[in-house]
Amino acid sequence: MVKQDTYDSGSKAARYERIALDIAYSILNEEWKIGEMIKGRSTLSGKYSVSPETIRRALKLLEELNVVEVVEKKGILIKSRTAADAFIKENHSKDRVLSMREDIAKMIQEKRAIEDTMIETLDTLIEQALIMKHVGIIHPLEFKVTESSYLIGKSIGEVKFWEHTGATIIGINRTGQLLLSPGPKLVFFAGDIVFYVGNATENSERVEKYVNKKVGE
Image (tube, rainbow, N blue to C red; front, side):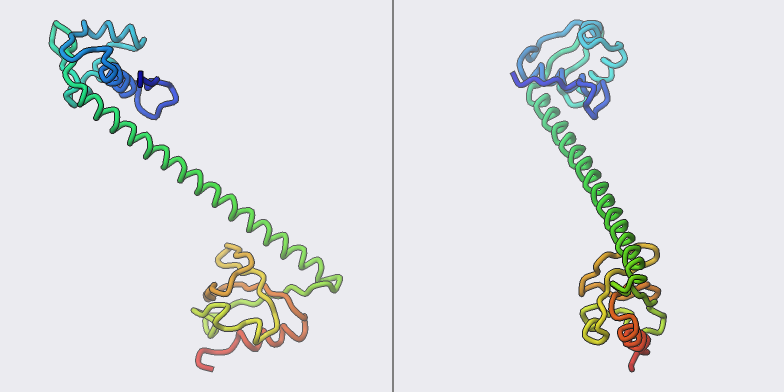
């Protein structure tokens, strides 16, 4: 027996679709033989504990696929195991697509959760750095990339920020989104607020001079 509980309440299909699938399994398993006549919708209605209208919709779906034929005043004629098998396989494919979509949605949610955690971590880092500033342990500073800055369109690695300034970039606030520990490939945009650490006097002067260079200088 390959029959499964296709009308489980946890299924994604509508009830009449689940019943149609279960009928198809019954035909595939030869519980109902090809050429056999099932007497009336009331028999199926009682079996599945649903209304005759739900059975009518299930049979209409199977009839459109040539699995059965509804013969007026006689019953339901079983027509094709091949068509029943094709219907089952098609619905299994749909179930896999639905499952994959659910997996993708879950991954997107997890990604957003990770990003939120990263933002919280950077906020904490900056907050702690500001506290440490007052006790002389670390000197967090920041600068804004202006519209005229030559940094625009260039990456951190390309401009060799640390080599020219002696300061280390720890984060960038870009239109409200905090980018934690940006790598050398991150490109500067106008309006970026760049957080860096270094000697408060020496490095800040070098950074100020370096980032305010005009294009072409």
